Length: 369
Image 1 (cartoon, rainbow, N blue to C red):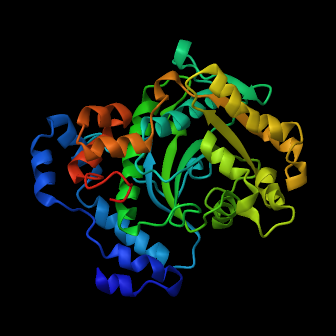
Image 2: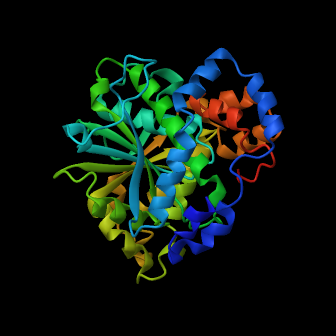
Image 3: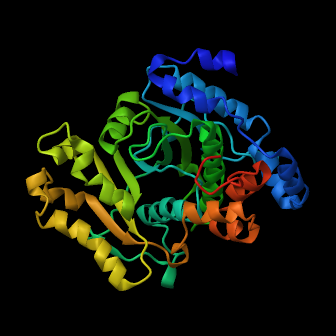
């Protein structure tokens, strides 16, 4: 490991001290927890694979030592193998590799939760027209664009993690596990896709786990486009974000090198759209959150470089009722007290299994693994 770390370029030298820390600590407590795993959990762990961490660590090291700004490190296909229903690795051919609609979920995934899963699968369900399975209190309520578009197949979901967070100090020792958690979440998303209405064929879906060195949305979108991984004429790139991220997205302090600052987002909105999911415990709170979009639509941000027409490229939805209160912070707190019932309630199955089997977040709830 030390020999590999010495090969990193100077650009990422600040990450090296933390990367040399052990990925998994408190081995004895982890083993005790593993012994209590159910048969189903053990099967899930086997599906994730014993070589997952080494594979992701190598991919991360290669990326950090390169000049690349974006790279796909793992992919899940909706086509399943016969043995143990393991997701197939994607090949280099087929229209599914060039999606007409790309749903981008950019997060710290520390760890992924059922809220992350809901943001991706609800968008996919609506855009494809497979809406029959979601009714009543779980059905999202919409504002923003006048009507929900049905975006063309083939679809692809991109789970994106930045190794340089604009607001938080990096904790690189956790990065391989973070990518493993993203892959586990991708497996859970694919399971959810398989239970959707027959209107949505599984053959239309693929999920990528990817990393970027860019901290800001405007630069991330440019890095994705420059990679050439998803370039299709007339394709749609939709970023799936929550309210807190939306507030940061429109905060001028992140674009100080531009005048006016929000003009930095011109290119973004020329090629990308947003789906903003509100997670409010009441209609009053939802209305408060919706006002940020309304301020953009009414021209309140023109002085900072914001353009009213951008509001037409932002879809605002109220999240499904059962994800209210679900957060990564709550998961980390539950891990600290080893409250497995809460972890399983807040996280999808593969993610919960990986957290438990690897003993993640048990030392403290700060988010460092």
